[in-house]
Length: 222
Image (cartoon, rainbow, N blue to C red; front, side, top):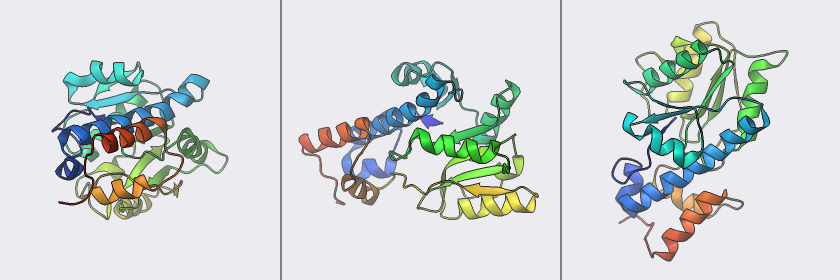
């Protein structure tokens, strides 16, 4: 699931520090690297890749950018409603288990998705798996089938307690839960400064960071 990487419409907190154009460049790079991770398993026949985009008018544009052929608009509503609609739509098409990933985690690789699917489909398979983000949210959620309890009203999406509340709701519903690796999403200038210090960055993210440096764009707080 992703927003189209358009200036002024994505990465608003980063845009305050680096400008709308640079923020959109970074968002596009993160999306391309996430798409490569998703497409890796699709090419091998390990899973089916689907892209859910907002706004709806950008579906064809982002499908062409990422090379993911199964591209669809996101549903309306808050993030929880949109995620639930996504898993319900895919389950209705016969897919499962289901894993949703965001596009703000440059460190995410195909192995994160493979690990999540193994947790769900293994001999001691769990009902739900999360990929925790360092800020208290999650960048990945997987289920064997749609679980409305995980996405219901009352969760402060984007807040620091999203993962804890989601896991608690899962347990209260009698679901078994597990986690895969913790990663860091890139939303703020502090996150971006951290990212610059990492080694082995995926190619699109590395290229975008290099271009922003060459352009002389500041990534320090004003």
